[in-house]
Length: 507
Ligand code: SF4
Ligand code: SF4
Image 1 (cartoon, rainbow, N blue to C red):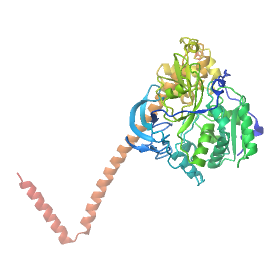
Image 2: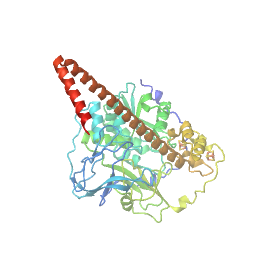
Image 3: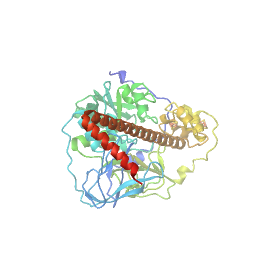
Image 4: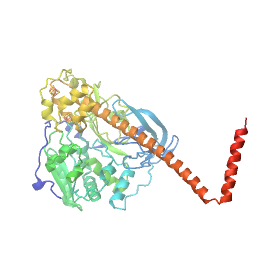
């Protein structure tokens, strides 16, 4: 199956928006390595899934790269110490980014300044299962923002899978961390792409870039020329239209086929990973380095010297902002991610996690252009721009009426939270906030249903066990009776009769 890119032709997806980019603001300087703060706050959950089992306790010394949690299966992703130091506490209520305004358990690590490293072992065994296990052990999750466990995405038998797509189409207008990574770690991204392709049995890698990324394309082309990889690696420039970097939209652009709402990219013979994930896969397999840092864009009109930082996971956002020259003045909104799909943050105490791509500081003059919300006028603009072919205004109406089931019937969960609908809405309805809230409620409801089903199954299993044990006891008694000789049986019966008589005589 090698239907991908017949004739290398590109396609389009429905909706989308042409946006003005501001990436140059944070691309003027090369990436800088952030200094270590006094304390790192490492959320136990930094991926989509349950936390791993905690391995450390307060007072313990740890080495850089030492696991702090462990995973029992692919749904869990361990976290590791980004540097050496002492575990101070496990703060159960530290501010985290998701859900907005929430608090969650974080390991608090005080760096000792020595950066003493645990032994990083490159992976010698290249069998797919060994690679997947290794990536899970080293804490890999998708670094494009979705933080889906990488092992869960790779595991399985996908006989028709022919292409690994490496997604470098960074379409949010202010974010530049992927572009800077592609400029500075080109070889690692190619290497990671080839490892991923071999792991899933794909025969080629396609690296997707935006058509405005000429420098990056030239760098990739040069690397591929100078060091031809073991598998075919192709470069594809896609039109810069938001949100072409969304996994499903990019696949549609490259293959001309739409991933069904309930389906997976693997159903079309492809799997898609972000460029930062590919570089982290290279680091994990070739160098044995766990996922302990990531590139974060710190930008926006409210930041004095915007740039990209390589930040240790757990670094408070305020620490990064200080290294970017601090705030230019009063900040009206601090956003985690881009202006289109980002989350408003309540505080800059929130730590950098595996999914932290960008910190965007907005000021009064940008936000004052926003107007207050008005009723929907049924103009249909939101439908026109929706890249997921949804009916945003109808979903919104159902959510406003608290009718989650009706919203889900209109495929609420297929919403990619791109923000296109809210951007064009003449009534200034914050549609994405409603969808995000609705999707969160759906997840909570599904978890409740799963918990209830599990409790019911446990109860039924217990009942069945009791019935089975009772039957086994009776069978054993009958069996024993059968084995006894006649005099023994008679003695048993006499003893039983005496016992009954004694009980009767008792006052
Ligand atoms: S946020 Fe959701 S509903 Fe709105 S345009 Fe994007 S995918 Fe469509
Ligand atoms: S764009 Fe806004 S006003 Fe127009 S139909 Fe959609 S929700 Fe209603």
